[in-house]
Image: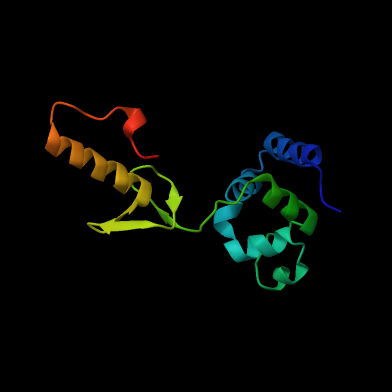
Length: 129
């Protein structure tokens, strides 16, 4: 049986009171300590993952599941756009940097208007979403 959010918060508060910095750091950095595939398997309640990962002795299965469920997993599909700071599948690589399709079209649209009349910038309603 998995821990409830209240029980998990009580456990974390207990660690704070007792000064268990190692446990608090481990709980905060759980996404960095485990592979994304392992996290997905833990969310699916697949206990065979315990054979493949190394956990501290104080961390049991219920606490592990509660800590994993506490933090949302970042979506790792797509590439990181340097302009809008979002993940996208479609876009171009320019000077070894990825620009999503939406930002590229906005830049292209700005460039077209700039050549026509450099003093007239398009309003936000004219930008392509």
